Length: 477
Ligand code: HEM
Image (cartoon, rainbow, N blue to C red; front, side, top):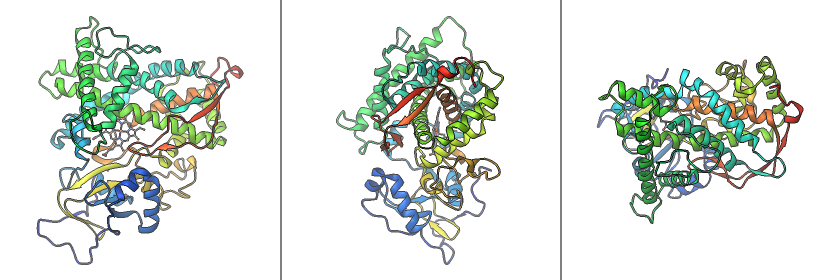
């Protein structure tokens, strides 16, 4: 159940906590933010060992409590409107803008329910032919004669796969965007703007100047919104009728047509196009690249995955026929993706500020403090995951079934649980099914990661591919 623990005690103003209540351990230090940003894994790991799964820090200024126990995580995931509010830095909130799901708690549930169909169920299943086509086309161009730069290539595939699903515009494999009248004409320019936009989220000062990351991010945001507006205009005036399940934008426009005064205002639609492309493109790239890296380190799993693929897909003549049911049946594949997310979670989650003081399990969390749920702590707890430092996908399979709610939290949870989790898992599965079919790969050394704000392998990391296709030219097995 997505609910706060029933025994969270919310203190009235002036009410004292029960006797014996303690503050979380550790005194915040002035250099905590730098230490965390430089290496969040190490920061979490050393403090978990020293203080346990809940401790106080000075990360991002003020007092920030890091939470890695499932009860505390359940508490922070479900406090919206009762005892927490979003506690992201001011620059981040301004970059999100007023139409993100992090604003307007009063409208959150309504907006999220309205957006959800585009990322789940039949619409998601309907994206599969497109995903197969784009991924297969790209992989056919991957070079086996010399090393390839992993992240840039994965990113190209993700971008080309996601833009049509979200905005309904066609992207050719060359560099142009195949719609004549848009204000941004090349994929490279669009990606550059997105990168500047992304960097603005974590600008240190909220000063609108070209001299600051925030200022440049805001400029990029305006240009991207202008681009989204043109895409929307194109769609509205296109001669072919809207197909509400074809892509995210069509779904929103069809809803607007049916209910012109409803939730889908023009501003919400253009902002959602902007934000969902931002959310999906970097996160899925990071996950796919990390999976390729993890499996490169544990090649013993590759044969198990190919065996599962042969078994589940035996009657098919072509990978493009792989459906949601086939994906669901590939439980070992899913377990390897989950294990990648467990060991290399892309982000922390649930950055919330307490709007009143609360007590849970004898610990006092005072009003005004910030709480962060940290998968880097929860995922490394032996109480939740046996031998937590070991790559062991079997932990997610019966009979072990590790990875319970609030213990496995790569996609957050509760009220603000990730809207795109199913899309991310589906796209990663399709990607790696094609990859496993076409290539073996060897890692070229140890990868360095960009650690913050998103954990992702550095752009210069290379792997060597070897084609397997000539052994099985047509069959999927
Ligand atoms: C590997 C891929 C992804 C990871 C690890 C991830 C992670 C997360 C996390 C941890 C949260 C919770 C944030 C919080 O509680 O403060 C979140 C929320 C969200 N994610 Fe994702 N995400 C991924 C992919 C996507 C994709 C593909 C989309 C959209 C297409 C998306 C859209 C969102 C949205 C809209 C929210 C906010 C939900 C709300 O406020 O109710 N994410 N994501």
